[in-house]
Length: 74
Image: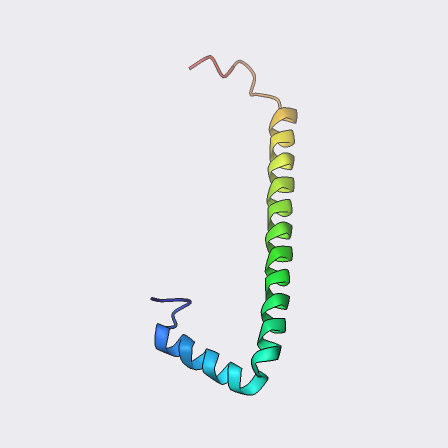
């Protein structure tokens, strides 16, 4: 398993150190906060992608086709 270039053993070591430093109660809170942040980031990314797609479609509709060339003329 390769997660961001980190192997399984390294991830386990990081989790153990985090458990020792923060304790089991804080890990749950940190996980919840990270989950909320990920949802917000995912929604913002989706909204941005949707907005850019809409603007590109509007730009295509507004741009006139070249003279003498219609999409059916090939």
